[in-house]
Image (tube, rainbow, N blue to C red; front, side):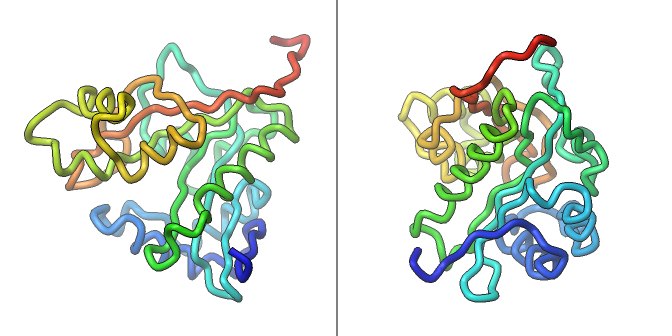
Length: 211
């Protein structure tokens, strides 16, 4: 970690971030991944909401998201529908930080980068007094169990500690809880597009008069 630094998104990171997407999501169709010009749009819309991990000038990790309102009574959604591919739906007054992605280059995993990216996003939520973080968490481990159980059963068993998922298990360790599963959340041939609906609540949230 001593050689790594974490910065907010700049347009010059866009090309490397587009390549990192291909590495972190190898089973997602290329047309569904964020493109370089979309990361440039993200940098224009809400650079403060995206944290980039750098080794020198090499992009090795990213944690991104937007502020918006989320309807927990009608939680079904897909990623682009909710956020807009260029973060068109970012709303400074939104009650929640919606996490659009978190990823670390495979060569840099196990160095605490993911944990630091979670911490930076939590700090952002606390500074802006948002309710917390909500996200759709992809389930890479479900690819190995898809023929044997439903996505709901898989998630339940991961939460119980009976199964390990490379993404959800880490999210649980970082203080997230599961509020359900999402169908057709993110195109992925290996998992069928299932995701978990995860939430981290801001323990320092200060209630507003509008609540």
